[in-house]
Image 1 (spheres, rainbow, N blue to C red):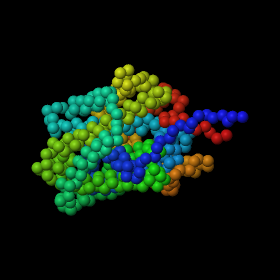
Image 2 (image 1 turned 60 degrees about the vertical axis):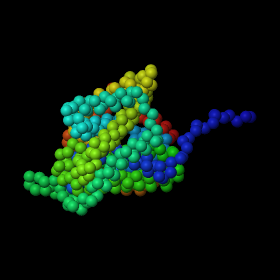
Image 3 (image 1 turned 180 degrees about the horizontal axis):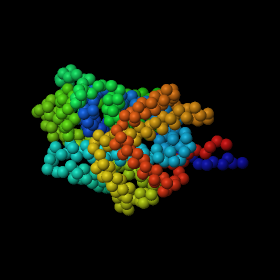
Image 4 (image 1 turned 135 degrees about the horizontal axis):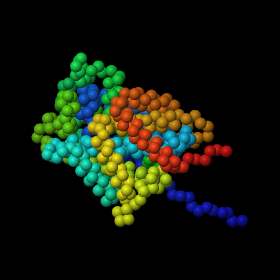
Length: 446
């Protein structure tokens, strides 16, 4: 009898990424507009101790990044936050909220970048009102997103190179000023300098955490990594170490050149650093680099958010009209326009600081769930072992640190995040989806 065959197996992704390639991918993903937009804001909270806030937020991000790496090695074809949540807790409602919270964080991040762009651009176009700059920026991004963009690896490398070059300029021009200030000095208060204690450091870390967002995307390429068991964890640590060193060096240069109070009040803090440390360097060039970094990050968020909304609509997880594709441009134009409306509202709901914190609050809430999911899955018999395992102390530490940061987030930012989550809950109650984002959960064992 002839053996029945079901056809050739589906092709799998080719593992081509080595350690260096994956480290560069991670650096490019994390290194966006955050440090350009937030250095001055963090100085307003931390004074000269901006560097310390970056260290603490890096620890929080690294613990969760290692948990993501472990989950990615266990479920390399379905490493999305919503799928992992469903697999661990079997609660469709929780999985839906987690999946859309990730998308909502992209919207608040884009709103943050629109505010940052308007502040940098206002120095070059002082006659243009800030609200008009914000709306114009979002409008141009909407047009570009609608027209259609094909990202390529060389373009990502170019974007990363431009962003890194701007930060290296800040470090180099400020290097000779290092050591001239007290790097533990805090902002002056009516009753004296603010004490540099745990509460103050955690408040600053909630803000700087925004600059590390993007590390969670590294698990999306785990199938294309050579020897992922060894390469992936090393790449995560190295990428975070490189970004952290760069962030700390930038913050040291910034507070060494410009007093932290003036840095906090500046609309373009890093441009002000270059202007004072290297007066002959054309500040308009650095302003252009900053605007490029902000625009690039915002556009990538917009593209990913609109495509995610499109895909979830096609699955019945969001209203069907979001899944409509334009007949000639072949882009999800209704999803693009809908997200544009949400971003415009968010951009006028808060300033850069509150929007960045709201983004951090959303993602730290998701990260607590993801760390808890890893604990559950590690203890459950029958779950597939991962190529990269971490001790239970890692996700536990991730929960503790993220929880501590959340406890020190401002009430305004928490309210903004809760409002978005409330909208997600309302959508769930209206749509009653029968699937979860990313992938259907596995059938339970008999």
